[in-house]
Image 1 (cartoon, rainbow, N blue to C red):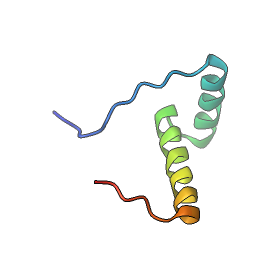
Image 2: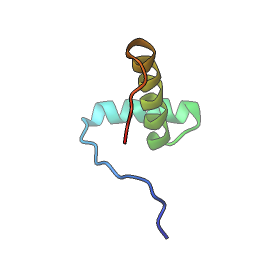
Image 3: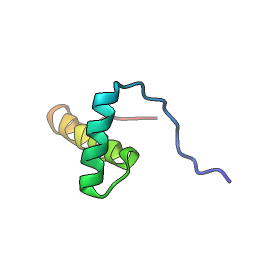
Amino acid sequence: MSDHLSRYTLRIGSELLDKLGYIAEYEGRTKNKELEQMIKKRIREFEAEHGTIEVE
């Protein structure tokens, strides 16, 4: 079964990963979902300043 989600390998120091895990657990999310929320927030901020990003 294909879920149509892209995969991306992230290389990150263990201290940053541990801190991300702490935040994710605090928010009731997995690390993956926490990263997704952080990325969405950053994109909203960027687009608010620079305009909508058009993707193909």
